[in-house]
Length: 188
Image (cartoon, one colour):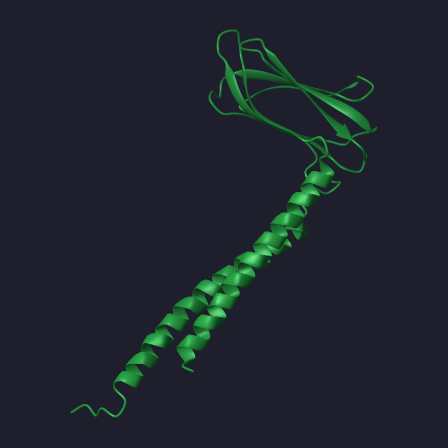
């Protein structure tokens, strides 16, 4: 068998391997995400002037950080307010902001946490992306845990290896084909 065909077969195996790794990592990551967020709240909403949106999430462990992410997508100048209440109706977070808000909260108790987002503008509506729940890739100290992305990194490396091997295989195949075609031919 020609060396170009052998390298192309290895390239195909690497492509299949990278797809399997991506699929496996994606399934495990999504199951971790769902396990950490049994009542995850993600929404794309539009708030009319002086209107509020309320959301709740159930926290079953105080070791997981509660994350609030709000991003205004249509106007950077609209004033917004967020308010998070714990299960005892104590204020855990209370901020006024424009455009984007991100916060992590260390829950003191388990139970239902409430989020309220209010458009404080009197004339314009605000379109928002909203996330309220636990992010599985955040450590207890708020730093990102890169070890959870190991499968993604391995999948990317195997995919890049497959592309490089494919290119090398094509070059070898073309060289081998030309070698067979001109076998015994002596140029003058």
